[in-house]
Length: 114
Image (cartoon, rainbow, N blue to C red; front, side, top):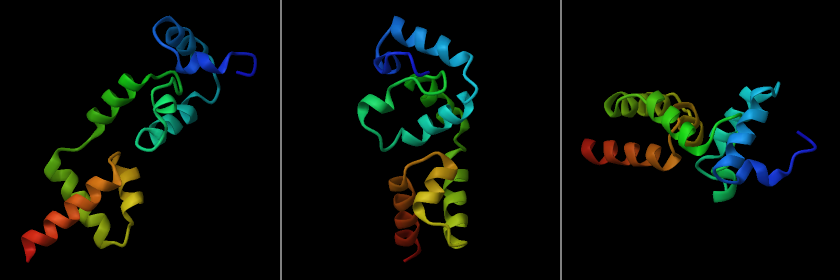
């Protein structure tokens, strides 16, 4: 939205509600929400907690938690993808976790196998 104050997307309370209402009619809302999810682990605090695609940080966090597989299933997926040559950043993006988690799971598995 070209004519809207950029600070609206990173405000608090009522400004976030207004931003979400504007997002409701936006044709690129799904892409914007996906971009917001991608930013979560690496963006500045201001960008991470803004409204992206009509969702605030709490909503995105809740969606990520609901989409996560159980820990054992997640760890098995990490190892399976790593065995197929998928890099840590790609694994993290696919599973909605951090690349630090990918490294931790791989290191723990290697230590227990030794």
